Length: 263
Ligand code: NAD
Image (cartoon, rainbow, N blue to C red):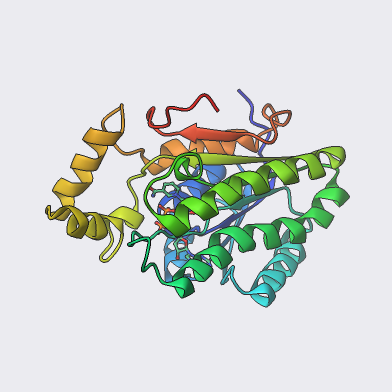
């Protein structure tokens, strides 16, 4: 299938690691021109090195900072003259007790995973209108569809699905589709890095980190394993492709069968 992404200008946030990095790799394989944003500049430099042969622009961007986002979008347009695809992917997650979950952390998570995608969509819309074509994919989560016990994360990812739905209606008249992917647990540093979900799960269950991660997959995911980042990336790339352009307002589970609902 020709995905029609050759030469498309694609922005990916949170591209220095995990899912975002694989998304960048997948678009590069389709011949897209990449604009990669992350707070981790060293990580971005490594990704750029791995994408030898592809056209790749990287910039240190804190998506929670309006000025940083505005400058980034201006620089992308200066470099590539247009924007075709926006992948809102930067994010994090934290387990915590419901009664004592810090309000400050909740607000930071909302800035990062709820307001930043809105800000970036709004910054891209004038460029999509100019093109007469555009595509947005937001990385939500299955925990936006059913609770995962992470209060800030679940709430904000549910909001991301609604943001996706609202913008899909708003953007359809100017030929822009807006979708979300809802991954189940994915094998990325979000689980494996120090202090991240694997360690948090270990301390909640009293198990050793790797055993806790494996136990979670075996007891919660029908396919019995975490997704590979590549499996999320292929869904994102497809949703932004030419053959998928009529698909809009969808929140696509990529979860090894974990969500039980019909929606
Ligand atoms: P990851 O930690 O490997 O990557 C997240 C990236 O976001 C990092 O490179 C980080 O530097 C970047 N980032 C964080 N704050 C930023 C900021 N303020 N500005 C710019 N960049 C910032 O995590 P991942 O697993 O690849 O997660 C990517 C997305 O997928 C997140 O939105 C996450 O919520 C979502 N998700 C992950 C899973 C999973 O199990 N890993 C499941 C469902 C959804």
